[in-house]
Length: 251
Image (tube, rainbow, N blue to C red):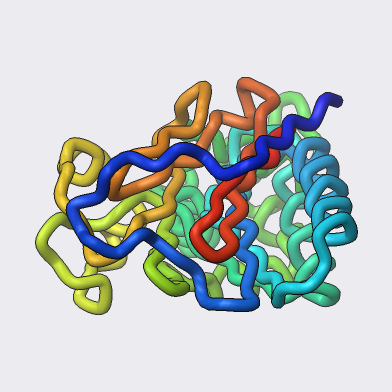
């Protein structure tokens, strides 16, 4: 698997806010886009991040994961295990995506489970329990619920909705225009698209997000989208921020 590293920083557009987005001194942020069950890509990206830390030591490093760890790809349970293991040796922030929210709802509701299966949840179910011919949906729900480990449930319930660092804000989907970060609604941060994506105004922070897959990262004056559709494209993207510099690590 080829790893693409881009240095120096990505080119900046003119921003409507006079301040150039910065992270605090002596910090480096590794922001990781939507994983969607691709444990193979996450493993490769972790190796690349570790290599980058070894080649460029010094700052206090933090890894920020933007949500959508589960669904669509084949190894969602394995991805959650890998993230829990990573948190034991690294400074990490885990944000919720809309798919984690629906997975939690599905643990409590058969109706939510039925809807979830149609948005990529079936692959997650089969990462916990093997397919069994002739098993109806109701029995599949019961088997899956009994197979989900409590450690995974606690992880999903503890996910944050946003994280701010310097002039950057990290969320899964985006922010509602005109609303301060501290007043944003959870539903918007997990699900918003058009209203956020079409907005060219400054949000008070440069917003780093996923949720809307593109073949290449999108870098705008007010936001950076690093969802590169990993489950379908094989490209899982990490945005690295240090001072005013920005670069990419991608599988």
